[in-house]
Each structure stands twice: as structure tokens, then as C-alpha cells.
Amino acid sequence: MSSGVLHQPVNLPANQPKQFYRGGEAIAALRGGTSGDFGPEDWVASTTTLYGRSDAGLTTLPNGVLLRDAVQADPTGWLGADHAAKFGGDTALLVKLLDAGQRLPVHCHPSNAFASSHLNCRHGKTEAWIVVGTTGPDPTVYIGFRDDVPAETVAEWVATQNTRAMLDALNPVCVRAGDTVFVPAGVPHAIGEGVFIVELQQPTDFSVTLEWQGFLANGDIGHLGLGYDVALDCVDRQGWSGKLEELVRQTSAKWAPSVDLLGRDADPFFQADRLHVEGSFALEPSFAVLVVLEGSGQLGELEVHKGSTLVVPHAAGELALSGDLVAIRCRPPVLSAVSSMEDVTA
Image 1 (cartoon, one colour):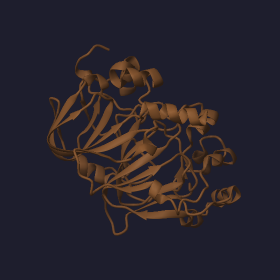
Image 2 (cartoon, rainbow, N blue to C red):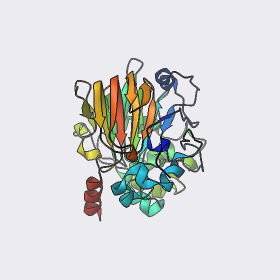
Image 3 (spheres, one colour):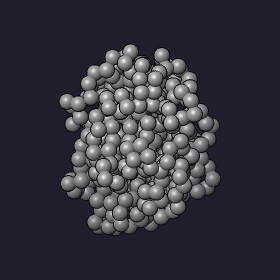
Image 4 (cartoon, helix red, strand yellow):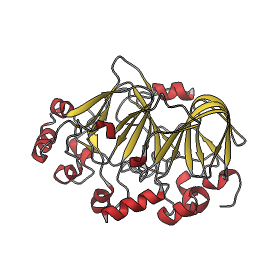
């Protein structure tokens, strides 16, 4: 692909594939659109499809080309030479806006190793949540088992759909805007009603749904076609109650031109920072996804405002983000961290 308009930042419309759970009002309020009952996720700059679907979830660029196809046609232009050498035309990143209009089911996601062995994919699904808003009296997320849980106990909970036991076994964490939650692959979790997040994740839609009753049509949908006897091998059954500080951070008091939101543990999977711009801030060349939370301004020559979601190709070079605004910048993994992780797990 030649240099030109698609080697500049691109404003993206909402991309809300239908989901099995309710939500979407907070997305509509941020973006200035209308909400559907089952539009709780906006897949931003997505090259990933919903599990089992051929096209749902993919982002279409203004020229009608799928972002996935554009990146695969010019991985160096979109992603940079170093990233392309490691991942080819794979962005290694999926970003979503997620507005939980009801509590999500207890579920978890496979690791890279599990996905490679059982799902023929190099990526599992480690993810992270950046809380950008909440509603209701007790906005809560549930993260990791409180105590170690035997494999046979997890299997019994799933077989009998013992929702209360599953939820009681998790650590409830009341959240507010500025909180971040890092969710390693395998860690069971659920997002409570009224929690609005910017979510970063590896670019798959792999979920092992432990609590499927009342959410999915049947249990067969919840085990990725593997059967629960195999799928439950991906569950992290260790207790997290004494080390939640490894997963949950509060960042709202941090105020700098760029605030690192996730820390080094996330580096092998993705990067996120909150940008506070008063005047102008220089963005180094990188593939990036931006979500503008407040204010307005310009990214290069492109006007942006509250609710703008943008994809930035590496070949756009150094860009000035100017104006008076707050934005979340999401980027692919740190390549040196990916290599280090692979060396350890090899």
C-alpha cells in the first residue's frame, strides 16, 4: 500500500457486534450515539472476529477496506519493521469499550501455551481493564479465586452450574474511575453491572465460560469445542486474596503528560497510558489505538473530541496531539518483553 491517507490517523465509527449480555448506554453517552440493549462492546481498530464467526467484529476503514486486510497488505507501514518481523501482519492487540449493563458470567481465558496446544493459535487472551466510569451504588469486579481451589471442585461447580459457589469463591473489588485491573490468562473473573472500561487484550475471542446458565444457550458454547474436561485445564486455581495488589492499581491521582496504567507485567501483551494534554504532546511513531475521554483537540491534522476512537499507523511518524483533552493510548506488546517471556516459557 502506498503512503497517503491511510498512513495517517483514522477516526473510526462505533463497531458493536451483538453480544449475549446487556449494556451500551455508557458507550453511547461517550460517543454521542444511541444505545442498543445488546451493544455493550465497541471493538476499536479490530482485526479480530467473534469466536466462530468469519467477519463479525472486524473494523472497516473509511475507504471500505477491512483494517485486518490493510495491515496484512502492509505490515511494516502499519506496525513498524520490528513488530512486523516478530508478528507479521498481526497487530497483537484488541481494544474494546465495554459497558456492563448486567453482571457478566464467571469465565476465564486460555494462555498462549494452551491456545497453541489446543486452539491452533499463537495468542491466548490475557487482558486488562481501565475503568473510565461507573454507575450504581456498588460497582464491582470479581477477580481470581480467594483461596486455592481443587480441580474437582471447579469441575463440580461447572457441571452443576453452582453460580453462588463460583461467585463467592472470587475476590470482589469495588472499583471507580482510574482503577486498572490486569487479568492474566487463566484467572477466573467477572465484571459487575455498571462498570465501564477500556479493555486491552490479546487479539482473540477465546473464553471458557464457567457460569453459562442464564447467559449462553447451552454449555457446549462455553468450552471452545474442547469439552469442559479439557477446557478447565486452562483455569488458574490458585488463591489471589493475599496478592491482589499485583492485579489492581489506582491511577486517578497520577497526573502527568503520560501516565503508565498497567506496568511491566503487561508489557509482553500490551501497553496503555493515559495522556493529559494541555497544549501539545509528541507521540512517538507506533501503531496505536486512542480513545478520547474528555475535551477536544487535534492529532496531527485530524480533529478529535470526547468519544473519538482512532487508529494510528506506525508510518504516520511522530505526531503532535494538541488541545485540551484526556485520552487513553493503547499499543501492542513491548517486543523485548515478548522475547523474554518466550525464553522463560520455552
